[in-house]
Amino acid sequence: MTTRRTLLETGLALSAGLALPRIARGASPKVVVVGGGFGGGTAAKYVKKFLPAAEVTLVERDRQFVTCPFSNLVIGGLVKMEQITHGYDKIAKRGVEVVHDEAVAVDPVARKVRLKGGGVLDYDRLVLSPGIDLDYEGLPGYSEAAAEKLPHAWKAGPQTLLLKKQLEAMPDGGTVIIVAPNNPFRCPPGPYERAGMIAWYLKKNKPKSKILIFDPKETFSKQALFFESYEVLYPGMIQWIGGKQGGKVERVDPQAMTVEAGFGEEKGDVINVIPPQRAGKIAQLAGVTDEKGWCPIDPKTMESTKAPGIYVVGDACIAGAMPKSGTAANSQARNAAAAIAAALEGKPAPEPSYANTCYSVVAEGYGFSVTGVYGATPEGIKEIAGGVSKLKAPAKDRDLEAAYAVDWYRGIVHDAFG
Amino acid sequence: MGTQRIVLGLAGLVFSATTTGGAGWALAAPSVETITRNCVVCHGPKEAGQAEIPTLANYPAKKMAEMLAGFKADQKPATIMNRIAKAFSDEQIAAIAEHLGTK
Image (cartoon, rainbow over all chains, first blue to last red; front, side, top):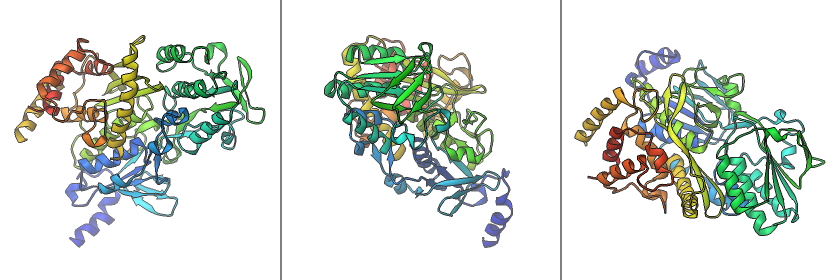
């Protein structure tokens, strides 16, 4: 036994792509998951579930995960920060080793991940679920330092609370500016749900205020539903300035508190800048990104087309018709986990079934959704069926969808971290 | 359990040659286990603590098949399931109901 193990570890195990699956060679396969959001939590949990013999390690910098979903509801005051903050205890109890550290390098040939704390993790399969990196250079005038004055609040946590605090300090009659990014970006309906949640707060507390959304795009997710809801709930309060009207912001100025767009220069009392984005840094470092900064994957398995053995799920990957959402990440991760378990057992990858459901809540008792079921094709992930909530639906449907949003939230948190 | 697996396995083979819902492209269809893992994200188990979305625990298979078919045909009121059910062939709906529902 000792001889065999030594032989395997020194000789065979070092060379990638062996004919014999890892399990057949008698060793526990090692799966490392980097990033403890919806994608990473789900991947770690489900690899362990599908292949209990695997040694699964989840690498996550933070002790707690604050979800981006419902963080707009924190800003609106409908939900408290504690309610969207989750730990990793339940995943750990499932037998996943949770390491609170940061992955700083990946060697895709030797199959090793180096951690900031100095540790090195070997892997047979690696899942990267690093979410997004904010591209501060992509918007002149914006920077990490500027974000302390013009919060992005696009990674939930202190930034969420900063934006909320600024709204609370703003005088009645003030102007809130939301700078929306171009595609692709995390949570396509997010900027517009945020406008609704800010309006919800302002209507009750500072009703003379207004919200301007500057947007380089000409269309956006659930657009007609958002416009309908603004008119029903907050008439005259929210103005959207799209690409055709000069909505593309060229520069922001944190000192003068202005944004410069084709539309003109506007001064804001609160300016929420959602900058351009790219795949999380570790994906760049691992060499699995394309020239635009996102990660191409095999639509059937989520395995990187750039580096065998590395799977990229969630906002960082290029998932065809699927949006960059928590549910999409969760679904991609579950399917990737099944593909990884199969690969480690020497079996072909099962056919995936991807899904997305994404609720937007723009007022208490007013929600709507987009959903889709997707399949893998050789040209990428395509939608089989789906769509958005009906326009002009009765109030009871909006109320139901707001309640369903809460249940969806409970369900996905349970599936990813429970 | 063994019997159920075999039946479902065969059902899976049947759709794989034929349909993937309403899409124009046809590829091998996912197994019913793979499909239904998406369902429980919203229709979580009891311990997820949901209030409004119906739990699928102890849901009769026959009723589930009727509901899904009704959603697919826009004959039952729904906010979201009408959009989701259209992704599945009639055979897949039968298999989903058999897999998740109770006898």
